[in-house]
Image 1 (cartoon, rainbow, N blue to C red):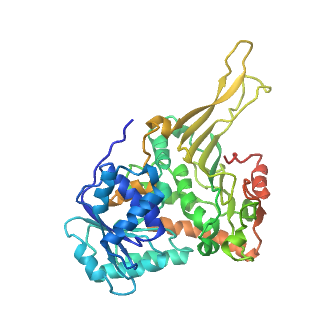
Image 2 (tube, rainbow, N blue to C red):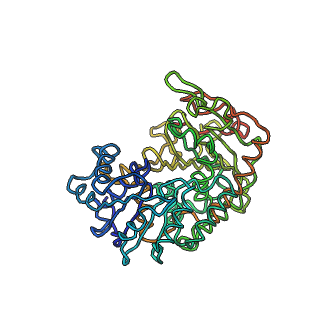
Image 3 (cartoon, one colour):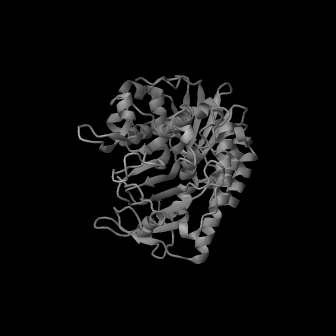
Length: 482
């Protein structure tokens, strides 16, 4: 199976923070792949902008080194690489002063889409937006891309939205969440709304519960300062996992258009129940044989920040009332695995008797690794001598379905091209961000008030013991992390 590549129009993309880790690791490789696939026209230009004192040649050399480091043997051919490198330009700019901005303005063409990627900390968003306005770089075809965190709480999210709204309208602002660019996440909408098979069963009458797991085997790395301020709740639940929850629980939009989809996601967030303290488990990983503890990684021995969190969440609407959603995410767990598991209820009556071993139907959407979907169903085990039931997996991995050599686009590849097209379907709207914080803030405030310490857990485990009890209380079990 060969994916269809739809070219975009010519554009100028300016990456602020172009010498940073995100640009080198994700943004620039994503653009290179889209160019090599023929989606970016030769007339497109990518302009790096940062405080680093580089010229065009120096920036090109830095990008080439980044490709060697982060793409290795997976990089497209040398000819494509040389052509892409020639498209790159660079200008030294300072968000806090006028340095370099006149030079940047001379590089932007008036007759193409212009996009500005804010690959910097949120504290610089306002200054960059103001400078773009001051130097007349904002046009009707201007788009800005902003990375998370979108605030640290509701108040800061509102302030950030107001800052951006002073210079751009909502249709020009692309709040990027790379989880929404994953092929499996997008396929979730296709499975739900392009097939009659699941939608009649997609409700509390037939779904027993839903588990959303984002497990990481690594620690916090060099993100100690940020992670100590954010924790798993702010870093993962409020944004990435909230988006997954919305796509699972949302009503069918009237059409596949940006605001129609985002309206339905907003309704889910507004319908979320407050989370009880007994339905929250927080944890911190301990030191292992060859790994440091969470406290050692962040350099704060008294930190009360969580590296793991599990929650039981309810949705008060007609579709989902009574069906719990269990969310968990953490660092230094048994394996790197992200999945959504929709567990269906058992049949109301078994014609095969009570002695036949029974396994519940489960639809598993794997986000990483080995992206794909699995549906477990009951069949008769082959052979004579009675009715013996066995559960088997109807398994579809993208690698097998598309061919082992097929390239599954990275999330940033899809999302950046959507920015150029002007398609906001997979980007968060301002009111959506604020609604998510309005639900999250009381949860954080409650545990800060009680000052209860996170529960320690061993690295390489599935998390704290109390997280298991969160499910056992309801006579359910977490799926194995593997």
